Image 1 (cartoon, one colour):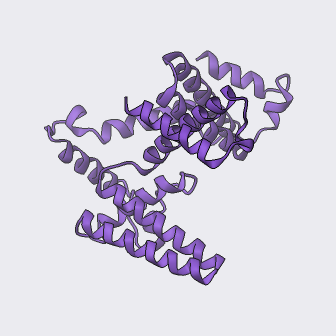
Image 2 (cartoon, rainbow, N blue to C red):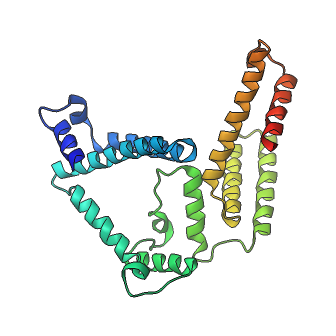
Image 3 (cartoon, rainbow, N blue to C red):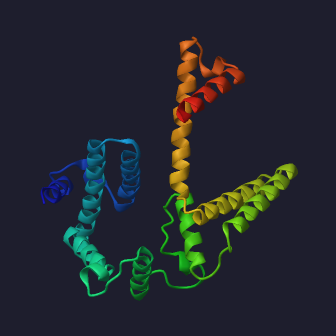
Length: 256
């Protein structure tokens, strides 16, 4: 693969001083950024944008593999061989002699294979070690809730979760009245976690839902700014009523 040779050249004594100075911790930060840019390209970009972002992400994967190879730990071929074996092992209904047509049965089979591999086992804090701490908090919260539910620690229905959300809102209001910044922060966290669990019961991905809300806010606020600009104003000089009117116009246009 030519990219492997390019990365090796960049890391060589005659390569790039900046690339030669990079460590795993440095690449980890860039890797997260590139992964988010892939998500952005999926949500609102073109096929070419996704193609480019996937290339950037793959470059950092190859770079990390090169760092490991320099330390005689493993190389890219080992990484690919491991994932190939794992995917074959976790799809016995495709590569083996099992027959699974139901999606629920396929998911259960996947989890069963993971348990045989020693993944997702343990008790106490170790039960959650397979959920990466670097995940966005909403995604991590939803995965933690899912894992806890698998051992029976869960609510009975979405109605019960809704009551929990209302309960946490009441506790937040009480904390606000006490003006305790520490208490407010804790209650906000509890409310957010309850909302994430409600998302889980409603089969809504919390992270995707919030990203959608952010895109919507940006789209509507941009309409407000553009409307004010046509009137020769900036948001700082506009009244709340003027901005609210344009905001409602943006909402009305979206409904059409």
